[in-house]
Image (tube, rainbow, N blue to C red; front, side, top):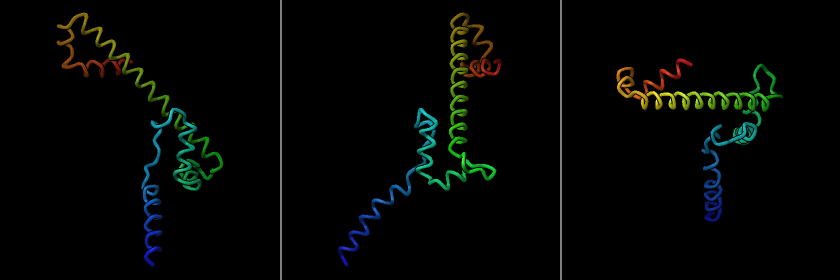
Length: 119
C-alpha cells in the first residue's frame, strides 16, 4: 500500500507541471510554422483545429495558423520600424533646435507619437 502511494505521488508530480504549462507565444519563435506546431502539440489536435479551423474547415487549420501568425509578426515589425524612424526624426529635430523642440512638444514621447501619426 505504501509503495503504491509513493508511485502515485511520483506520477502526479510528473504530470502536474505539464498540465499547467503555459501555451507558447509567437514571440518565443522566429518561425510562424514552428510556433503553430508547438501550439498544436500543446493544445492537442482537436482543440487546435477548433481554434484555427473556422467555418467547419478543420483540414487547413495549420495553414491558417501560420498565415495569421506571419501576418501579425509582419505588422509588429512594421510598427517597430515606424517607431524607430519617428524616434530618429525627433532626436534630429531636438539636436537641431532644442528651444523650438521644447516649445512644440511637452516631452520626447509626444514628439515620437506626433511623428508616427503623420506617416
